[in-house]
Amino acid sequence: MPKREKQEETNEKENTGNKVLVGLLGTFMILFGIALLLLLIKMDVGGFGSSVLTPVLKDIPVVNKILPDNSSSNSNTKSSKANSTKSKKTKKKAKAVESSSPSPSPTASATKSPSPSPTTNSKDAKYQERVKELAATYSKMDAATAAASLETMTADLDLVSDILLEMRPAQSALIMDNMSKEFAAKITKKMSTK
Image (tube, rainbow, N blue to C red; front, side, top):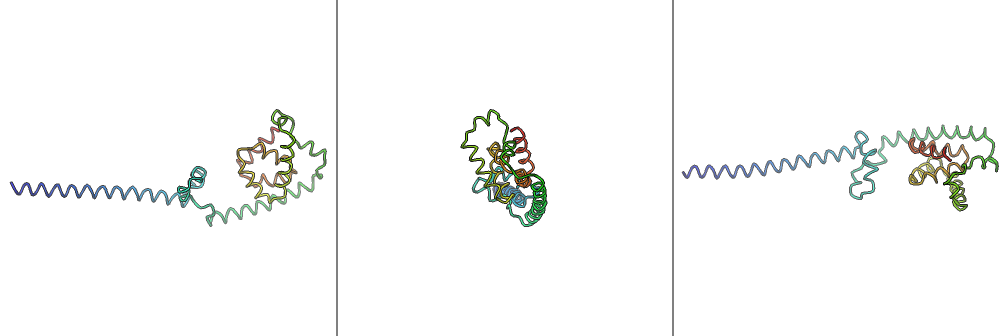
């Protein structure tokens, strides 16, 4: 009987050792999987990190460290070249439109102002004056910078559309050309109702 007890005791020690080994191996596999997932997000494989996760997680302090960098060298170089080419083309178009259209006159600004609607009637003179000031400011800015600034104002599409309507058509076209397609479409729809 003593041999049998020794053998059972040895089996129990081996089973305990095997359980610990399996637990450690399982933990390592889970950690490896998480690390691989984080690496794929950081490398922005498939655009998932930049298009899906960045808008959701950009304001969370520690978690936003795993998000892809906005200034990755390959995509940034390609997009900046595309944007500069696009900007040059739109500047040429704007100059052509500007030269063919007469300079804005008091009657032209009256036709350009939005038609009266319940929301327009409720706006006071201070709002209209502020819109004119903002339109003048954004008109003096580079079109890409103005577009980026206006695109951050997603909560107030009415104000953005009022600012663009107050500008010369050529200038607002330049700015809208530098906006994302989705945002420009929203603004166009908003402008068409005024």
